[in-house]
Image (cartoon, rainbow, N blue to C red; front, side, top):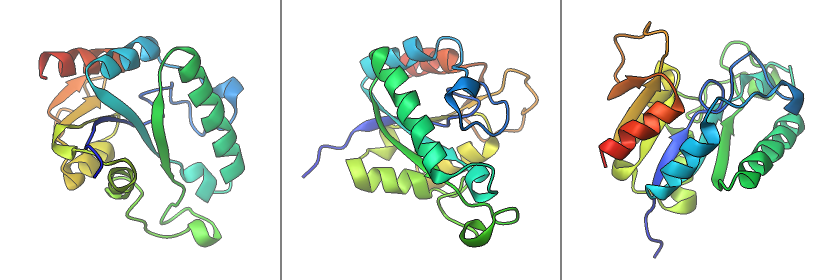
Length: 184
């Protein structure tokens, strides 16, 4: 029987990297300030790191699954060079309105659905109640609630999202990990 881990689920665009629209090339990928140090601290707090990301750019035909996989490999290599292990990356390429062909459909994997979290739990054995989610959209928080994740943090440096279901609103991943450390 697998020992259940606690996981810090991270959205990608807007949490790990600056969200500048559809990103599929390393030259367009800008890591958020302090992301590597924050992730090392999260690991020190006992969290494994899992990225869950909607990638409608695939479904819309802006870039391919192969483009996404190449960027993901590159991103994980950058984390590894900084002493950070990303346990797994899950993505949801569909879009119910704008998708093309097989990608035009509803999917439980696409946040706010909890599908990627459920897949991660089945894959690596996760104690969801002890886990945390950091996202930059309310759909990230809704997915975490649906899956039963214990701590939910919303990055919103603009303070526009005052009616969130998150436990707390923070300005960055660095601030999110600070909060997790204080609320062990």
